[in-house]
Image (cartoon, rainbow, N blue to C red; front, side, top):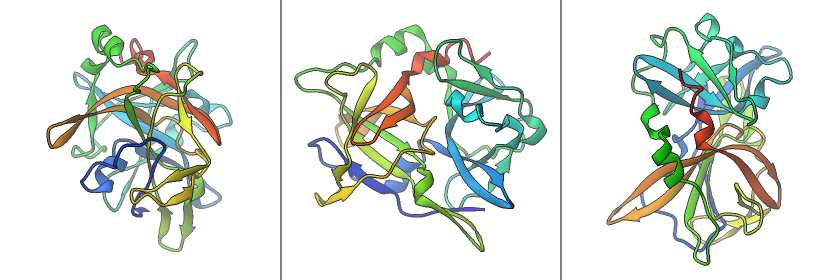
Length: 246
C-alpha cells in the first residue's frame, strides 16, 4: 500500500497558486513503484493513456536501464493508494528511437481500476502537439509539474508513505524544452523553502496552465526526464508519444 501525504506545492513564478485542493493537482501523474529487498520504493512517475480499447502506461525510458522490467512495476492510484502490480499484464516497453520516452502496453486493463485517470490518445494529434509547444516569451506562460520525488517517500510498517510535489514554473530562458527549477522556491503562502531533488519524478507530465474564468484549463506539453537542481528540469515533447500508442 502507498499512503499519499499532503502535496508539497512550490512555485518558481510570480502567479498565485490556483484555488482548490492540492490533491487534485498531484493526481495528474501516478507514482510507479517496485519491490526492493521486501520493501516498496518509488521508481518514477507515469500516466495512463487510452487508445480505443487499448491501455498504455507512458513514462521515461531510462527507468528501464538498470534492471527494472515492466512486469515488475506497480501503479498506485488516487487517494489512499492500493498498488496494482502489472505482472504478466505488462508487455515489453516500446522505446522512442531518439527521446527518453517509453510506453508499456497493458495487455489486460481489467486489473487497473476504471476510476483512475486515463488520457485520450487523441490529445497527441499533430495539431494539439504544435499548439502545446512551450515557448519563452517576454511574458511566459505558466506550467505545472506534478510527480512523486523518491526523497519524499519512506517505508513504514504499514507500507510506503510518499509526498508528491506540485511545482508551478516557467520556461527556461535559454534551454529549449526546459523549465526553471531553483533550489529555493516559494510555497503557496509565499514562504521560502528548499525544493526536493526530482529523482522519482521522471515520467511525469508537464502541463501548460491557462486561467479560464473560475477554473484552470490544462494542456500537456512534455514528459519530464531529467533535472539540474538549482537550474532546470528538462522535458521531452508530448508529441514523442505519437506512434508509440498503437
